[in-house]
Image 1 (cartoon, rainbow, N blue to C red):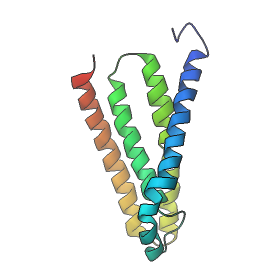
Image 2: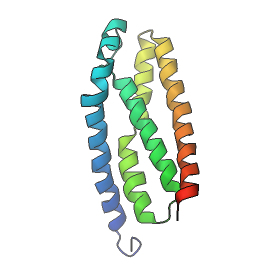
Image 3: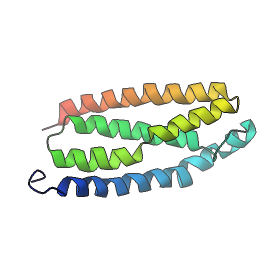
Length: 138
């Protein structure tokens, strides 16, 4: 069906992206940031309170979702949830900016922890998602 309608794929990606971007915004603004606000102030970290760790959390979540979807049959599901939802939920560029801001303000340990946890955690959740999908995929 997707191949026969040139805009079908773009529509699926767009619909998924709305949900992923909205969830990322909500998590950063309302759930994760207040949790890290005190630590953020105590250590004089740059940027909004909790933003680096909120970004890491959504990136990890998106990695797990992508791992699950890779083995699932159907281009539509991959476009909608993989490219659209997980793609807009995760943001490597924001994580990179967070690391550079931390490094430029002499928060080296925080920057290395963020980068390391993001990479190791992201690959680990991707691998876990792939393994779960191998077992559960039709």
